Image (cartoon, rainbow, N blue to C red):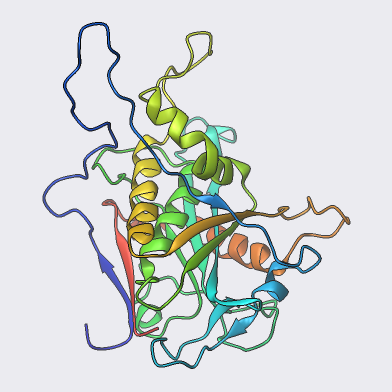
Length: 299
């Protein structure tokens, strides 16, 4: 792996990752079993709330002995913070359009402008890298990466595609795409327009784990919280970065068509949505079955 590019690596060759659970301790009579302790991610608070994300985190190259000479979305107020934009899209989500046709989901993330431009805002038609679709794309990647959601989750179990699963996998793929802590970043900010992702990662996850993923008895429908495999995998990525001195924070912004001033929202989210939809529409023969890691080398 000496050449720059995006490499596809199955993350679990032999056995799936262990579930998040409480450490085994001796229980005395009448004492409850200890509950798992989860340290969730944090909410990002912009230093200037009047700035759009693409202005708050413009594309910059930080020239320092301990930093890679590659452009990133860097916080203009703190050169140790980087922005990653994520999104997911699902055609026939929930089988609402057709019960007979299986849903098809795509994931995307951005770590710099697709054209590697230094402009604050990406162009309307920034190039998108589809590493599963084209080896040439993988060898000459842009800053916008998109791929079809895999058929299997990190535990090896098959799961039907949904938009929520696509966005969770987009977060996981972005967090493990590069060794962000080794690049010198002290905070990775995940930009998304989905409250399910932000509140789940920063507030709800410890409660779900403490309840062993069981919903309250009065809840209708499924008795278990969905997407446990992806939530646990994402928390593992967050914990690993934290152990290396890099905090993960989430920034919730209005989605396309939901901006408070009547516009279509910020350009980063629009670009990520475009990439995810493109990946969801790719031909079925390019579907990847196993849960896979995308590894960016010298990018």
